Length: 424
Ligand code: AMP
Ligand code: GLY
Image (cartoon, rainbow, N blue to C red; front, side, top):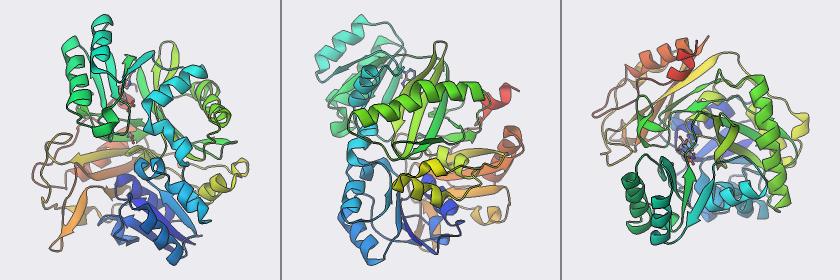
């Protein structure tokens, strides 16, 4: 088989790494890829937004399976376009991708079908949003309606923080059109967990659990980012809790999407808060999480390609997934200043020293070649992923490896996995 993976982050590097292990696959292309991906696949200089060019490439190169990493092309309808041309593509179509592209749609959908989630109100007028903020108790959570790379959510402890957030989103338009509307939600407290599942619209196959670390600073402090690190499995997600999540949230969601005439096929990422009243949905994403993919895929024993094919053909009922019992942990190394302003082009050293560690993978994200050297080229630069017999061992190996990497301004959290370790 000839496979095309779309995207250039750590998630896509881990997808390419996993797909490369499939006995069905002869050749992998990645558009546009990155220097790490380039070591195992052929990188093609087409960006994920250039859907007509991607399609032309897939036809010319006789691609048997296209795997879409990021949300933007899914939201723009890449799956619909590829299907029109009879190309097999993994991911939801545009109608189903609305679960990620509009928080207002999603909140209304959850309410309509009685799927547990925080109480909310939505606004397209600044003054109305302001009045609502003044009338509600704090903390509260303010979200830009549209896509904003994981940065459009503000957990506000005070009235001033909340007013600053709507001002940034609705007046300064820091997320562009994504901020035409805002959702204002009640604050939920509890433990967060990411549950990802394959679904063909009929059958649902959950992946192992993982937990992201969304904020920039240790101890879950500071602004939200795309994700600073993750681990899998999550010890508090017992079989009983997982089955409750499946019954109360996952199955109702897939059924409700069918009822809405938006059947969902692909990976669905369900961000949950485990509150005292039970699990509640924080968000849906219509693709693998980043960095959740990096820890989940390093634990997946089964070949991922037949699972993706069964998702597309509607035969997921015949599939099972086997997992490595080991734990996996990912530390994300970022450019200094991220998630705010940062400077690219810093030379990265130490990568060669990590090449032959059997338990450690380095997945590239914001990197590129400049004059034959690998330099930084984004906020999230590298993902150091290590496996171990438990989270503590995986954590130790990941941080040992991270200690070998240097670039000017490098920053990473020092506490990834802390919740899983404290519990022991
Ligand atoms: P989202 O992109 O909607 O998942 O939001 C990003 C992060 O903000 C989540 O992972 C949570 O940490 C936090 N968050 C979002 N909604 C809420 C909420 N209603 N209560 C508490 N925290 C939230
Ligand atoms: N790690 C969160 C996300 O992928 O959206």
